[in-house]
Length: 193
Figure 1 (cartoon, rainbow, N blue to C red):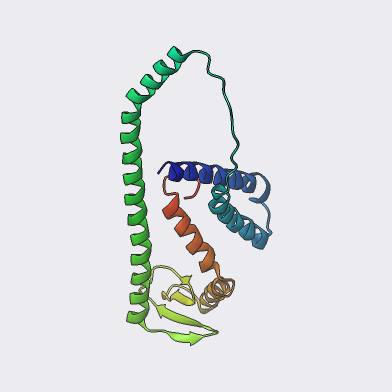
Figure 2 (figure 1 turned 60 degrees about the vertical axis):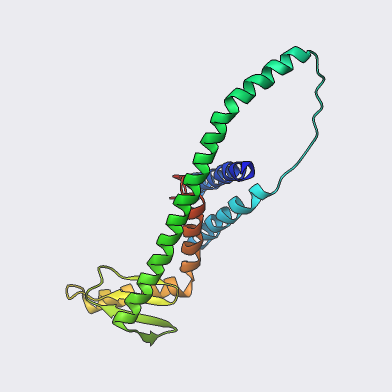
């Protein structure tokens, strides 16, 4: 469990660095594909880089045996409280992570149920679902959910559909899925959200 805690701290640090670089240098740029690539690579590097470790040996000379025993006794007294804190952290970490993962899976199930309820037509390589009961338009994997309220003109509806089709063709769902899984891993990190 010590390894998990160290991994999470390193992963948070790398995520913070990548997001900081993005905010300082790339946020106002209009190179959307490059920004998307940078942020996606930042997430992947934040997952993989903490797994790489470097070990080296340090040798210390022992001067006073009495001092070492006093330090060891102090560490033993405080370690039980630390162990309890770590256990609580791990239980909370896994519980919240499992709940968030369940929430993501439940959301996908609800979308599939919604698609089955409204039915779909094949349109330009994706499945198009239209309904006036949807609050907004969105796309997931190769499904495009198009809200068709009566207050929107046909021209605006066509623009919204074109926008959602661009999301499907550029596979934005991959980025979003990766980010949602990363939120399950680092739910405690406000930068990820």
